[in-house]
Every structure is written in structure tokens, then in C-alpha cells.
Image (tube, rainbow, N blue to C red; front, side):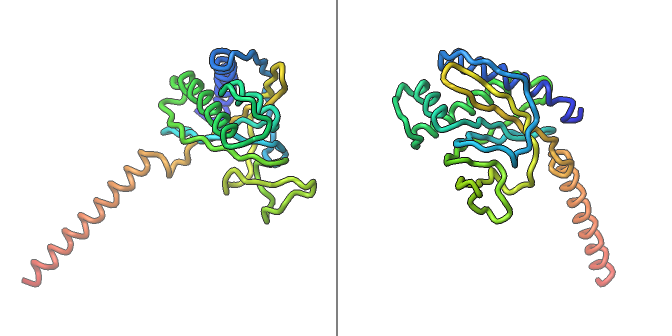
Length: 213
């Protein structure tokens, strides 16, 4: 099935996972708004907590985008701390949060996406971070910092605005189909063809050796 046909189900699972994690792990009631598509070049935030996921057919990224104040508030609720500045402890807490949300969503999506693997989450923090950097990675004209999540081209994200009594944040997903050449079956087929070619060359070499004998 085309990944575009699955985006709605993936987003719903991610939103449900966000609600479950906040209500059961943080004892915080959140409200998810209607999802929307946003070009990553237009995203500006103070903290990005992200991880990659991949499977046989599908791959992508899940991320939380928040202000510094909201990140501190959420991480403090998780850790039982009272920090007002984004430090390593706050970043660790936000990394664990996206990991928990992705883990719950993964279980919900097993039937449609198959077995998925989650990579280690990572967090970047600063003022006015954007997801995709400018060509030269220059400091933004507004004095903020342009920071690239990775070196790939710019893509759109399916975003959901999440509200709670202390503020708002965004949960986003960027699902993609695994390129055909990267699929396990394709790799296996190439390896088999390579072995067949090696065997063919060996047989030819043996025949040449026999003719010289």
C-alpha cells in the first residue's frame, strides 16, 4: 500500500500514543487538534526531540517540537525536578518522551506497517531552530540558529498541535516508503546474482585451466 494511503492511520496512532503516554506516565491531560501538513523549512522551535524508525516496507521520523518553557515543564513532570533552563537532564527527559510515544505507536501500527525498529532518540535545543538548514547553514536572519536534522532534502511533516494546561507543542511524523533498492529482498537478490556471477566465472576459469592442461 502507498505510504500516502497510510498517513492518516499513522497520525491517528501517534496521537493516541501521545494521549496515552501523557495520561499514564505524566498524569497530564492533553488535547490533540486536527493534523495538518507543514513544510519543514517553515518550522521554528526551541527544542526538537526526534528518532528514526524503519521496517521492511516503511521508514521515517517521529519528533516533538516545543518551546524551551514547555520542554522544561514536561520534563520536570517526568523527572520530578524543577528546572527552568534546558540542560542535559531536560533533553534526556524529552528524548525519553519521544521514545515512549514512538514505542506505543509502534505497537498500534504493527498490523499495518509490520515489525518496526526504533533508533536511539536524540535532542537538539537552541533558539528558533528550523528542521532544514539553509544552504550554507548560516545563522538565521532573525538571530536564531538554523539546524538540520539530517542531510537529506527538505520534506513535509504531518503535524498535530497538542495542548495542555501549561502550553502547546507539536508532534510530527514523516513516513516514507523504503526505496526498492534498500529492501532486504532486493539486497538478497543482488547478493544471489553476485554469487551466481562468481560461480560462473569460476567455472569458466576451471574450463580454461583444463584446456591448457
